Length: 326
Ligand code: HEM
Ligand SMILES: *[C@@H]1O[C@H](CO)[C@@H](O)[C@H](O)[C@H]1NC(C)=O
Image 1 (cartoon, rainbow, N blue to C red):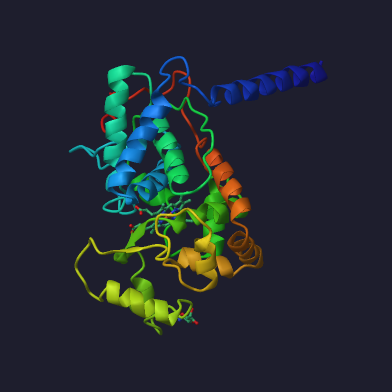
Image 2 (cartoon, protein in one colour):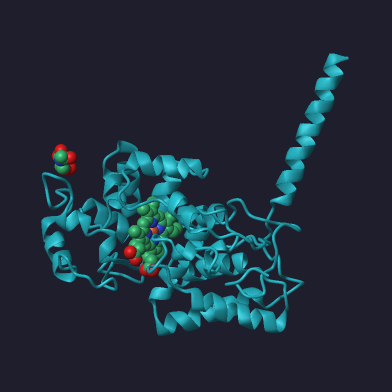
């Protein structure tokens, strides 16, 4: 009698798990029948924007990361603030640094004109990130799709869920573990810092007020620090001052990021700290030496990131305007 109850319970639990898994399943080619041109249209808009401003590729890769780490990949990062509520995009980790929103808007407008109410904003971000990886020289990869859009976006959640550039390797490992990623995947994904730019304000503490005994972070290459100080003068009030993450190849998704770490020429503590543990140090060295392996690992990690807490089936909605909930 008791064992029968256990069996029934087991069957229920297994059934539930399978159900949940099916529900959360995304599919490659999801829009094949409902909007066959969807991926083409998005790729077209990304390429078009990239020709005008190559920085948008970095912006779109980061946008996918910041979308997925906050409430899952549900397009919540795209929602505009309202008088009642400050949205994710206006939280300090996103404003003023996050960019590429107009590329998503343009793709969405076109998609709405050819297949109304079909393609989610969350999927547009995921495709645009893939296209951006590809266009900057990373590996193109298939993007499982079928995400639906969330209806909630809170600045406080962006602040709580996005890692800060001041974190050390243990803190980074913990924050990524909280999101279901291994330390290795964290190191792999950090390679995205081989493209794009940073605002001076994101790392100026390492140049001018590191801690109470040292104004400059001793782990930063002094020559590189001197160069950064010229580009980011102390006390500058210009919030728009930016520097490239990887000055040699700022628009190329390569493994120079890992080479830069070994040379102590990276902007954030969260980058430099990867040398301080033996496992992450080894991975940095391997990636620096083997771009082919890293590109594959990176593509796989992006696909995994793109599945975080997605809304599928009839959950959420297909937003008509990515900036506003329906
Ligand atoms: C490991 C923890 C991470 C931290 C602490 C971090 C932090 C930052 C910071 C502070 C910036 C500069 C923003 C600015 O001031 O303009 C930045 C830029 C960037 N991050 Fe990360 N990041 C992390 C992981 C990631 C991941 C996982 C990705 C993507 C897979 C990513 C992609 C990017 C890109 C592409 C840029 C350049 C953005 C642009 O040029 O507009 N980052 N990151
Ligand atoms: C400041 O940073 C240096 C280098 O990381 C370290 O050795 C020193 O203990 C720190 N000082 C304080 C007061 O935290």
